[in-house]
Image (cartoon, rainbow, N blue to C red; front, side):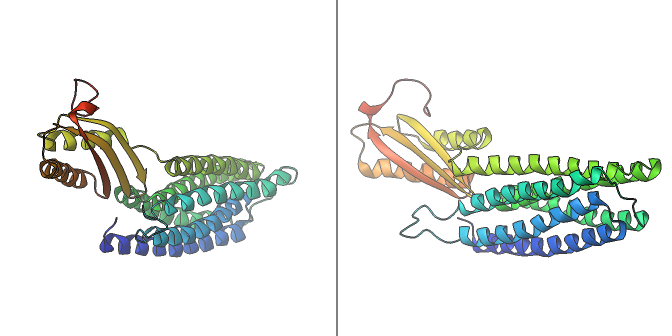
Length: 301
């Protein structure tokens, strides 16, 4: 469970994301109005998704912070994954809307108006998104927030497509090939579709109780091995992740004659070490007598 300070920080970042999304949406739409470019229109349209996604991420973060209750004894951590899945779906919808506008324009490509001003305005929005995306990914990864991380990767995709749009429009202006404008809009849409698929895939994996990654699993094994003195074996180690929470369970085999109090002291040591190695860990240890050992070998199996 996140502490109150972390929860407050995540909420403030999510609120700020809404403001940043509204600001960049306005800037990009202004660039489209100045130029009439479909490519810039597609960039502005994606920003509407940014606003909706930021609002959904805030709602998910607040819900995920609720403590465990009778109906949700393991907490509400997975709410953030639902936010990320919804964001992926919204990204796909935005891409389809862009394609609907861009495909007919191949027959009648538009001549861009005031291109220098429009491109300069769009560059400002791109710079703002780039800085904010880096912050969201860094904070989301460190605090294990799927909602913020998904929002950050979405903005990163937005920045990449914005760079492609700007370069392509510069090429269109230099060559006079204005058909590049709807072509770029289609390329942006396809890139957005790929981003949406990636966000949905990663979030769905979290909903399906993904196991701890190799690095975290190594830390878990190390903590168990160093603090399980007196035990005979650990087996059936299982892990699953749910946003900021990590669930760890295993069977601990002890000598049949060991008093319950001593076995309990071993489990306390192991649990403390695991919580230190993996913040937010929820540990379940099942004590078994030595007759349940699965054989010689490493302590953790």
